[in-house]
Amino acid sequence: MEKVNLSLKKIKIGNNCLIGGDCFIMPGVIIEDNVVLGARSLVLKDQILKKEKIYAGIPAKEIKTKEQVI
Image 1: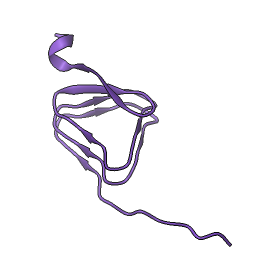
Image 2 (image 1 turned 90 degrees about the horizontal axis):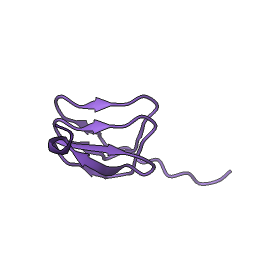
Image 3 (image 1 turned 90 degrees about the vertical axis):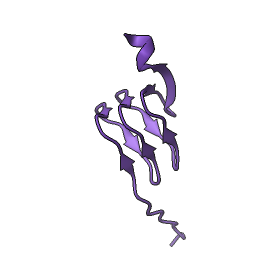
Image 4 (image 1 turned 180 degrees about the vertical axis):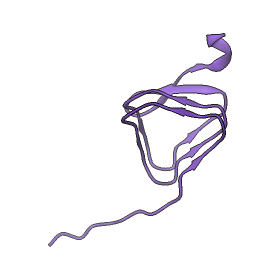
């Protein structure tokens, strides 16, 4: 039998966040207020998604700020 490391950390999701379907959010992630995360995105362990921004991809990267959309 192989040795397996299990990582248990809390995930914090702020107010007014939109998380697309089929996303995978790893342990220790902090998603600040007013963040949009595109569908099928992967948020890596201990990553911080900053407020008022839009993220997508594998791994999730900032693609726009909400100000650029308006």
